[in-house]
Image (tube, rainbow, N blue to C red; front, top):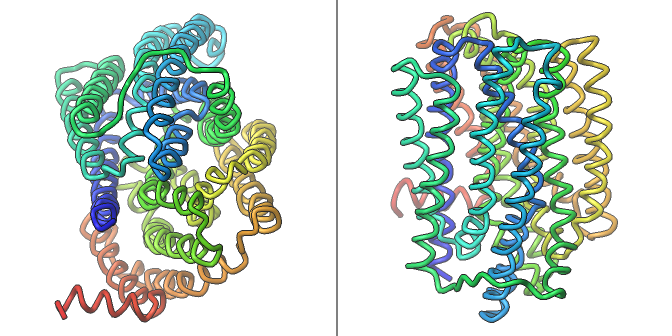
Length: 503
């Protein structure tokens, strides 16, 4: 158990290091890529990435299903069931890869008809070529998702996060070199595909050498197949919801406006994705533990204490990011990619506000999946996501890209924060009122105090990179101090003191 605790602790630290590295480098790459490709080609790159993302929906949530089932079998130490499940997943993923390849080719053929109003013939040809390469990338991702599930279930987080960091750095160096030599969008998507393949091979070799699990390519029995698909179908709905909320906006904007507007929107979206990543670092690490806690039948009070702790930590991390972006975000975007991207500030800020609460409670998803009660949540969110599409189309025609952002923000609030929490409270019997009391009591005071003080600081910092960095550092000092006194519990303050003063 000590080793698992160490793995989780190391996993959280490496996750935040990975997220910091990935987001800092990714954000630095955006202006570099835009300068070399131009805003229009960058918009095409973001669109083809979104189209490839739609195909990932056809994975039907099996990556999450892998973690759930393997966590259950691991908790009961059932090696036979574990091996049978892995064998079934391999066959299923192989069949899905063929299916996705077929669907992808149909989409590739239809791309000229879909975008002939908003793109030139040259842009459409580039879009088709890049999409074809990313289709191969999607197939590789499907075939390797079970590998990620195995490594996460066995909580080998140090290996998982370290390889992610190294592969990402290698990918970024390759992109910079290719763009410097004059290559374009096609070079980037080829690099993405090759690095994904290398990463998959590394994970497969690691599992073969370090984890006691057996791969067998054999057809699953009907009972296992039914159990997998009944569970994964509703996980897939949740994946579809995320794709609708975060990818369909690209499609709507791409068809109703132009590639330049799409490029600006994508800058704002990337900032939101970075925001999401900082929350998922903690929740992803603790998902196997929560599943095992539920399957082992821990009392509700112990489970809620764990959920509240994870939620508070997520809120503390996200609170600082929200503050510095709300206060210094406009300056950052102006310095980062230029004044022509100023609208990207509101594209990012509007969904961040409801998202800070949505992300703080992501650990409850693991509880629903462990109890096999995730179906209703998926249906509720699907309904709000469909409404989001209708609202976004109407608002984009009236307000431009900001209309799509408001549609997503409303969907998040109604779906995740109202309907899902009512279901968690009344049906699953998770005391979400207590959860939010804990969240607001221990997190919100530090966020509000720090936000007000940071607003005053912003009046005195110059509009330069030096001013931006100083503003963020001063705000960070204010936030850490406020969090220490207002957000940490007494035992947590003692632990911090012990770590700092070694006593």
